[in-house]
Image (cartoon, rainbow, N blue to C red; front, side):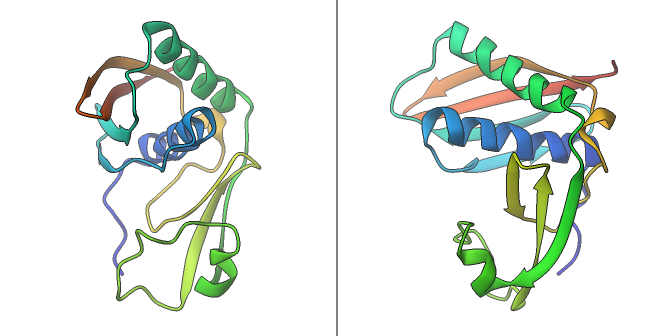
Length: 147
């Protein structure tokens, strides 16, 4: 399996945003994402459109996690071990028996092959630049700014 060509800061932020959405709405991690150094987007399946205040709260929650200076760690474990605490439904059929699990402190854990920062203090400031909700899908567009 080859490593995805993601920017480590932006990719780590995707993990934090995903976990924030899961905790707030009980939804799955992003259904679709496009992660780039300049700007990124993630789609979430939600039954109703979040309010502008809710979106501001999400931005604040993500920035709160970033400012907590959490260590990013990874470990290789078997799929059977990972299944005990992770949803592995997005793993490709040819994934090896041993997979890499990336953790953002105690906040998030996810099977992942992409690059990440070593600590959330390296990320910067998260800003939702826009969002839209169409037919049950919330698209969140975001950028990172230096502190």
